[in-house]
Amino acid sequence: MAEDPVRTTLVAKRLKWFGLTVVKRYLTKDKDSRDLRDVHSNPDFYDKDIDLVLNLPNAQKMTIDLKVDSYYGSDPARKTRGLCNPDSGFILLETIGQLQYDRSRRVSTNGTLPVRQKPDIPGWFFTSSADEVYYYFLALLNTETQLNPFYTEYVGLVNGNHSTDEVENRLLRELRVDRDLLVSFSLSEARLWYETAPETLFHGYAPAPNPSYLTLSKRVKRDPFISNGIGKSHGSIYSLVKPRLVSL
Image 1: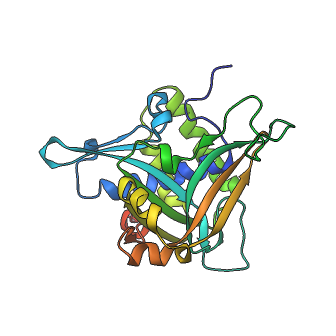
Image 2: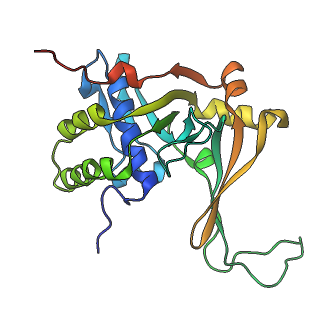
């Protein structure tokens, strides 16, 4: 079976589309929407970790890798799997994309267990080709049942190579946003910063287990990351793009 152009329908992939819809409208607010190209479902860009291509003045382009994080909820007790969770206060920098479980039973001379089949793979923080990362915190109060039909319709339109503007506009009207925050940063500058940043700006690692490997991200304290000038806060953006109700 051919791989779906939008990759998978896991909760994280749906959340990414919800966030992508908001960020796209933010980037094209008061601009020509044709200046922004959504390539996140284009296989040619998968290995580059590029989701958006933005036209800039003087024929320049900026490529964007979008990350959507649901850990920004205002209520510490409220948890909606994959959609709304208490605010973590962290930005996650994925340093290992795939740490393989299947390793040799024999310890190597340097005291490690070498991989047996597939190699370990670095995370997007080291491999992405994007100019900038847009890290969007989006805590939604909707249920999966309320939002799944929008995503199903979206996938069908992408598979048929049709415009998704209309379903995205309807989605924006239906989203119940608890809180949101957009932080952007230059990937090259962040990599340089990472090499010398003191450990006081970090807080351990966040593991994400998969059936055959582990993804590992370093937790960066969000507020110092912004105040030190590496990350740029755009503030809440959903209120800027939410369609207004037309009164009769």
